[in-house]
Length: 350
Image 1 (cartoon, rainbow, N blue to C red):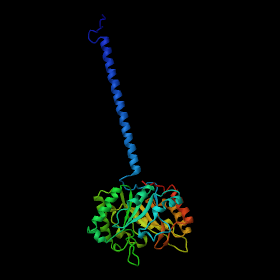
Image 2 (cartoon, rainbow, N blue to C red; image 1 turned 120 degrees about the horizontal axis):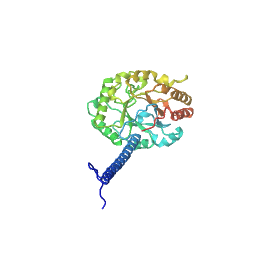
Image 3 (cartoon, rainbow, N blue to C red; image 1 turned 135 degrees about the horizontal axis):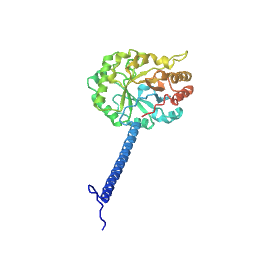
Image 4 (cartoon, rainbow, N blue to C red; image 1 turned 45 degrees about the horizontal axis):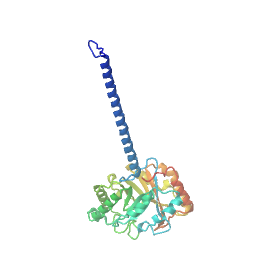
């Protein structure tokens, strides 16, 4: 029998060897378990990170992202048809394939129209989304006092919840060009709205709608406050930074028999007035009439827009309007294509 060799005051060599072996085994097992747990954790984190990226790319349930070093390009697509934006008779969906082919790519924003009491046209919005674009919805108006008093709350809540259910990014312009009135007593957004020359009434109605959307938990909509340039008195209608997500402006190049106004000529003064609000600014409706004027105006836009870093969207009105035909033609088409393929107007829909 082999005798254990024992120190007088400690373990035998065999016992010491066994103890060391057990300790090493425990350490190896512990290291393995730690490594396995860390690998699994990294896989989970990686999966979570990938899901977050995918979610951000799809941006479901979120408002349109504000571009940082670029801007959105958009259009109202209705060349040669309809009688203007106020009719709600856009044929844009049927013409998207032709428009995309003409431009060379889908644009980030597509402009459309909905009456105040009209159900949300989800089929049209789905088509816009499938095109890879964000809808810019012009939402019609009614008596501002009836809105402020709560009489129209059912309509507002229904529309808000419909957009919430749609769950994709949306720009919303309620009662645009409120500071303008035609000779027939009609605002561009419709008749019976009575916001013109009634800043307090308009502001109260705007704030009421905005609050209703917040109460409904609508997260995917950005409100675009948008006067018409020729109406002036912009500040008299401003609802306050708390109630505005984007600041818009509509202005058309209307000069005749002289060089057209440049992008800077058109928007520099408005930019100076509203850039201090630190909101993204959208040129929500603009156009020039005639191929050469379109070319010169859009070329100046490409050259000068980067000088106005808070202007984050430019939406062209490619259609017939009450004042005439603004549809892109010939040289104008080429100039718009240059915008679409530029690095600056490259912000993708999200």
